Length: 263
Image (cartoon, rainbow, N blue to C red):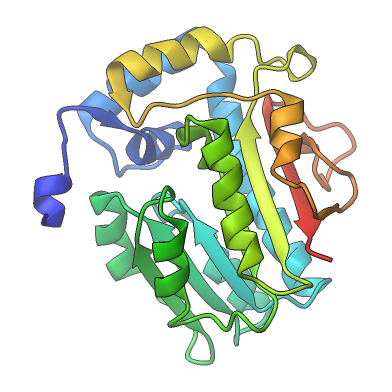
């Protein structure tokens, strides 16, 4: 199927609505309508979108500067915006190699034109679905060396894998393919009251009736289970806005974030 055939501008899509929430221009009227309605039901959604993006920046800088990571597998990257994974990593270490994974045609179109990196490093894009980890690994192996540590990033993507057992298996499969010293970087929306997540439930119900792909939130225990067999780094599983935050009291958002290392 061609990219044009796959692109449905009549139904709101997550990559474009997310782009709308963080102030981007790569979206359609239907995306803005659904995005505005969800934001009216659950005003924190814009804060979540921004906090998730800031978490990405802090995590990539930390792994590149302090842990020496030079390879990133960014699964479910979404639309390119400012300071994408490769820009942050290659600014610090120009030789860094980054593979982005998504299967939305509008993301693919932007990736082809915007995701250019340094001459010393490599920036590549894999057109694949998060539900097919074997295809992701096979195609990413053309750019990444799976004998060396890789930071695997699942930011706001496993919430689109509705079956929790399937989501866990996806993470296990990918992390089994990378060596000791690799990292799992993950964010996930939650309905936990401690993070103010109760309002996500009706907003997600509206989303599932009016947009694509369908989404789910998960509790702390289910999100923590993604890190089974890995060692969580400080400060552990927290609101993504609080993970190694640059200020003493950032606002809490109902989106868990954490980074763990494979022993």
